[in-house]
Length: 339
Ligand code: GDP
Ligand code: CA
Image 1 (cartoon, rainbow, N blue to C red):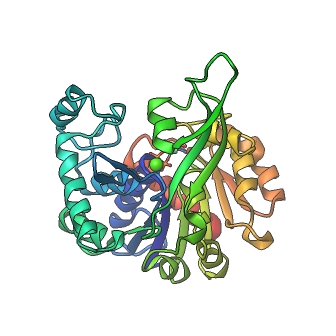
Image 2: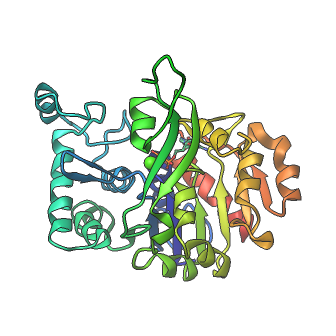
Image 3: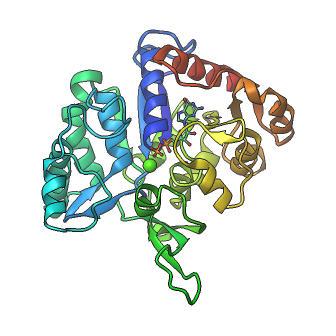
């Protein structure tokens, strides 16, 4: 096997990719060449303009994680980060103050915004940024592709916490405001990926799916990470058309997400919060869905039969990404399931 494509969000996807690459390069994933190409199709619907800068959280999390620049404790942003610019902005009373832009991180957003202003599409900008982060560490074998070059922004319809005594009013806020400012703790009613109907897959995205030997859906958020990638017109069609097997890894273990806030968002879109519920939501390719196989954690072994009944191959293996070896084992099990 020479080429693998992964549909990734931020922290969950990047952590999986780090372990996958560790396993592939060391020959720990049977059936995959150690120099196989790995293409990442990353979610861009979390992107936000802040203080005049274009911020792409999931692209940057993947880029910094694979390039060795990520803060390992937080899981996002730069290592050895400082926050002077954020403090200065707050001292000016400039909103929003809830989004943490670190000083080092800001350099990435400045370069990106400048290139976008000069007319380069996001895909070209991302490739340029990756020449700093990925090429020295991983050579040319890893490519990071934005799902689309067009602007798509997930918004969430919430009960406005500032509603007056006349009654609760609803308002739509950017996903980052729901997630970071409100910590996903306000009542949400809908997830709306604005602009997605008019988006086109970014350069190389469709080919990365149709020409891959294996497509992996990592344990990324099924709603606001993988869900938005699949929502770009043409991506589902590519998944349906590819001759590569498509295998997914559950980010739900037991009745909750491992980290992050997938549970809240699954509830908003009416999907049962369980490994089997998410498998049924993605659906089997044989019945118009997107997956051929699905890994659940050993604690969810009882749900294997239910997933199988939905037309998917399924196996229960440990799904905690505690270190690179454990994650590489997950990747090997995923491939073994659909080979
Ligand atoms: P985000 O964009 O930063 O939210 O990251 P992703 O969408 O890529 O991934 C978030 C998801 O990763 C969460 O829903 C978690 O359930 C999942 N996740 C995080 N760590 C682990 C882990 O160790 N094992 C599994 N199975 N899932 C994980
Ligand atoms: Ca994200």
